[in-house]
Image (cartoon, rainbow, N blue to C red; front, top):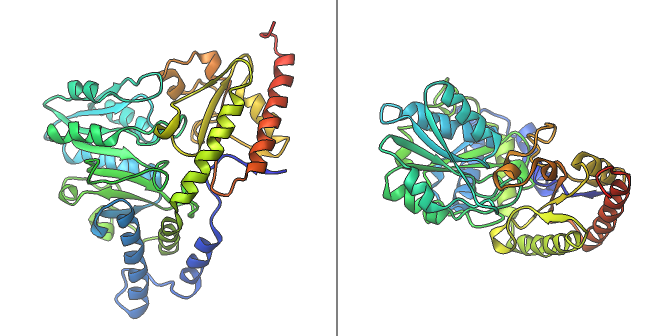
Length: 383
């Protein structure tokens, strides 16, 4: 049996998404900036998808800027504010559990003279709004805090964090790549000025994403790609019309029933794996965790060995974020929540999809038990 449990890294493109995209490769292929009827057809398709995405997060269509994916959206948000508002201040606040697209961008800005505060999190990965409030200074220009953590599934209380930023008049950005369509994203209720999204995490195509830019911030951001006046002068370059159409279709296909299904599968998988000896769940339980995320540390064995053992059984999982899973260094997220390096190295991330079945989860539970038992039998660290 082949079981794919790495949806946090990427999802299969829904066939209905592919069907929606096809005509824009071969029939409606014109440049959306062209003035003829073919260009108008492409522009209308962009507008429709822009509205679909905006409606899903309680935004205005003109506040959606299409990009090449979550990483570009994060870069545009963080660098855009940093360079655009640096005359007002050079202090940025983020956390120690961000996606590399935010962390590495912040580290790069530090080398350019910006001051970055990396907030701590508790043992479940949550950021304390009071700690955030105390960290804001007179020269703070941006707070960037991930919504649904890509490794351990922690869902931050953006509303509480957004209130802090609003009260102190600081721009609030969140990487919502993993959380969009899996839990509520409401940019108005949550006080967001900027938010990043990606299509390939929700059964859309790779190479397309979006950045929500609140209307009053458009003139403050400095764009990162110079050229024409595309995307409200914030992201130059001919738009990926087929990709954007596919993105809009993927958003329109998301259902609350998918979330409920994944929650039930997640709970069964987590509860069963935690019955194994010397096993720890990383991140919170319940509705403060992404519906599809199970991250478990298995003591005394290496996560890479578990991954390869499961792969031999047809099961695809990850040892952490797909963007850093090839690194041999311990997960920065697990380190931030207090896990020891040896426990971090034994962690596996299972990320479910809407099409996974009970039968598949039963197979995974049995297979993990067999692989873990065999590896521990071989381990010199088990007495």
